[in-house]
Length: 280
Length: 185
Image (cartoon, rainbow over all chains, first blue to last red; front, side, top):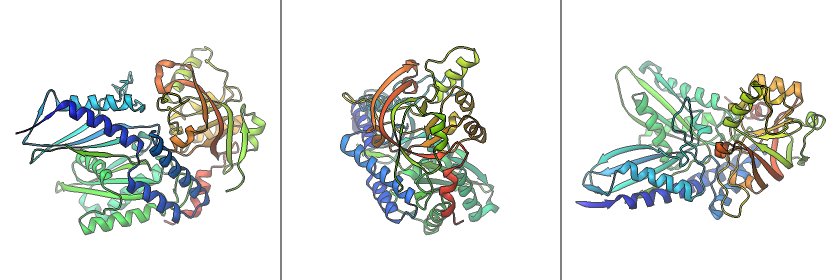
């Protein structure tokens, strides 16, 4: 059986937190540049110029793209033939988050309890960790630091089967129009369809990890992604102050659901759609 | 874009009332950062009839919680946070004499009414342009509530801080004006 030490996991997670905060993924950068070329609003072009310049400064100077370096969402796939040695997996990941956020001069944005005390934990832990056990002996870790300007504008609708495709489009557009200029557009929109209420939300988070240039493998969902993107770009929201580049992509993930249900979750992400990945 | 308007703090009511939604500005001088937690403390302080740590008369508040500064830098990344979360506290704060607010996103009708009454301008900085914006900040000094960490009340010395007037003191709203020509639903 293959063995991995928890120290290695901690080191890698720390590094990934920093990378995600400093380096905008290439596909997002390219989508912003493409948006700049086609943006019809002069103010919108000005905003996109600033956003693009910002990503370049962050990359060359190792600085956080945004001051909201997010709550850290971690997707882990553990091969069932892998032995993790030296401590707990979640503890190792959280130690990595604490190390990365401290060493990397990232903002600590997590409070331990949400309603009464709201005391900052001072090291951005705990992370939100989703773990799946899969065949093999590898450990795959993906990090998605999620800012809350956009998270606060996300939403979920529990539709019924009769609502169909039109119902899904209406639900997504209601959430987007309500979000409007607030979630730092151009947005990247993750849509989760199916499952239960929580699973749909999970799909919508996972959807943000997919490169913006890759459409859903299912042709009907791929077509829906394009149609929704077109609709969002006709809202006028634009890059914050109005225009035609309201979103860079709509990524849908879907899964089996109940005969009575059609859950639709929308995670809105800002233009700083950040993530990093390792396979150990 | 049109010529940028230079503003130096403090911002008087007379100057604020001349600014119009859509104006592009460069702000220089001292601005004060405060966000959710500092606003909560400040409004609680006022409710108790006590004095605030600074005199807000003719000052500009920046809704901000920066990343920690790297060694040798005055501040870390420092873009605007969502202003709407401060709406519940804002009319009370505007009564303290604030004449400018910098943030991002929409404001409530109550805030806009208070802005009209007090001659206040709401500016937006580009959300998520935090490393770029940091270039215009020369000094960051915590004034009060250090226990709030990134949410502390701080004074920022800025030179040519880039912003745009989104809601002016007459209530004209550039978020609405700017979206309208491009809405094709």
